[in-house]
Length: 354
Image (cartoon, rainbow, N blue to C red; front, side, top):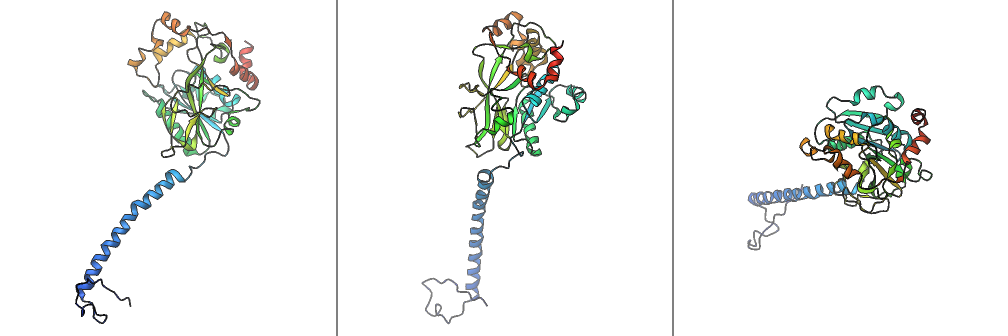
């Protein structure tokens, strides 16, 4: 039997404090009544401590689970009114550069990608995943939704967020033949890679031609590298798309950042270091004058109709030409077309023979 030794104050009589004295019922009751709240209070105090420790483990100490069994990468993209450019863009990135899959989000009202996808080459169709995603300002939402779906599928280790008018270029394909080879070389602390734009404009072309973009536009300005970046993010660290150029990573992992190939931290959609010597994104931003003007009527997934009316593509031909032809495009740079010729000859030969 457990014996209780109740607490007694110094003012108790010697008789009461005698070892032979039996504790009264009130003494025992008072002791139990004071002991239980104290124990409960101690236990309650431990709850937030345990919660903090567990939260710190889950959010900081426990590493996020990896995705994919290699350094393979997928592309998330959103499109509207760009179906006629898709074949070249898809075959270039899947077959020439080596992306594993492409996830296309269709911002059109009538889901224009559905018919295109059904008629596409069956061998590639299974690597192209289409989703209807109409509405204004949907690019960030599409990117975030796309990345979350890839995270749930747990396959691709990297996700590139690029557009249909952007072509990723590896500078040294002897050293890094495909995108997975290049990404494998990046330090493990890189949450994402910042890739600078190299911008191509009109090339003095006024009208659309039914030829590949990388064949039609092969000249750039001497200083064509642009501060804008696009991000290739590690799937395991991705949290959300903050804008079309830059992503946010898991909370409380302050050491996970976007870097360029020189090791510079890039906190935002711009990288003034212009690190394009190993990898770049060739941005065919305007194409011909005729094609550039279609932007005005087509709109953009990130811009309202009211804002779009102020866009350069909605101005007069004279003003457009004045802005886009300020700098002469005299440097021949056809790297994407040469890679297509080498790695996707079936596609290229269709145009070379005509």
